Length: 236
Image (tube, rainbow, N blue to C red):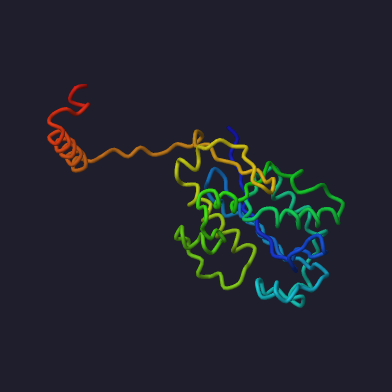
């Protein structure tokens, strides 16, 4: 079976609307293979040629002056596409980032983002399914899943991708979350993939003598309470 390669991806942008000409100023990617982080990341700052809106600056703090000597998206597009090629991409609120990536790719005459990758998992859609009615932003999930986000004073694409990796690993640790059927789509049309555990070797932990003794004692008390009518006595 081919190794499962996943990329956690996040972007920072000049504003909220790719349709209105806002651009990407930072991309962060974190690689995971077979549910293990490899340490291989991609971090790009981009000179977008556009000023960031005031509200966006409050979020990421990336100034036009800082980006003045950084490459354009056109100059790094080959490096970026080579990194994500044929991987499964995990994004928190995927429609937002994909809209911006598609806009950037269109400007340089490249196919849409999905044409380069194996698929997309929207971790926000997954979180809403797992925790309905609760706050499911990245900070809220970090608090809920005990992921340390104390270094996140401002949003940063690489830091947020790293936090998302930790959050996703914790969210999908339980067998019920991992063994569900794949192919569901959320309302935005983003395919929500599920991970099949059949390709992983899970450790088998045997009970020790103390635990076995406690188990036997519990069965004995249940048997007494039922007047000797427990099913396991009949089977035995």
